[in-house]
Image (cartoon, rainbow, N blue to C red; front, side, top):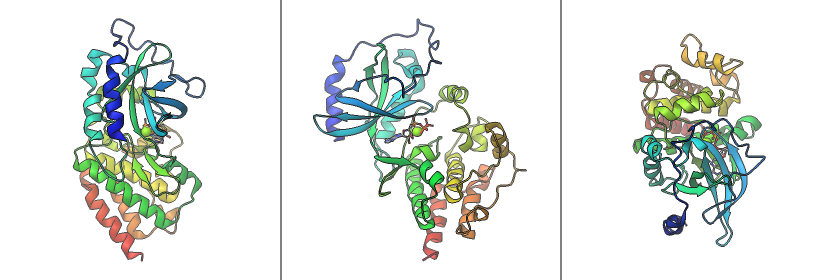
Length: 323
Ligand SMILES: Nc1ncnc2c1ncn2[C@@H]1O[C@H](COP(=O)(O)OP(=O)(O)OP(=O)(O)O)[C@@H](O)[C@H]1O
Ligand SMILES: [Mg+2]
């Protein structure tokens, strides 16, 4: 399917509208009128794909479900915010295309397949928008299970192992995800597919600053202390974010008790705030699992697991000893 799709977009790209130069405009003047996906669709189609419905909106744009009716093929399309509109200067600066290219070349059961190029499509207002095409997962994200508490402990362990395998693979390919959180872990309805999304998106300092301002506390609740301190990040930062996500998966609650984003951020950063053992909230959590999750959550990167491989070894050992 992906070969086909690539050919189609290569063929069509010459017929796409000319690039608009938005430099002369008040470039970000319109940034605030965020389009509400539920009220109006920004686009009716992207290439051969007809937009069916919005799935949700995050820090970079809105994700839509779309279908190529002739081929009966469904995909998910992330239409990037207007701040990622085509702009020759900006394109050079944000490296988005290059990162996508690397991310799309990766193949692993637990990471989403992406088309290896950004598709440009004119929206209903005549702006040329940048779109990322990916495999559509018919199901839900991890948030559902955190809320519904509908998994057995064995299923939680199994999911954690598969997420670790995907993340480990990304790290081995020198990709730090930087946005590890429940919404970026997707599941098919039968839980047979477990996929990491949104790796390899532009995380240049500039784009993070914008996100930082735009977003509420949603994403920051999963950031490592060093990420909150806006320091340079490596794979160990993803391990901390995974630790928070696993804490929520196993207990149904965030490890920080704070009532608002600012308080939570303070608790994440301060080593004076002690995370409770997950087993306190879920008696099925073994002491081994407690140790694994809390080791991922150590404030100092050098005290954490140094790689997901290492964490995975402890997790699989823990899983085996249960049998
Ligand atoms: N390929 C996909 N198939 C099905 N659903 C998807 C796909 N990619 C993303 N989603 C869902 O679409 C919604 C919006 O995703 P989006 O990435 O824009 O926001 P987010 O994950 O909440 O934030 P962030 O921008 O930090 O990733 C989320 O609920 C996500 O789980
Ligand atoms: Mg996402």
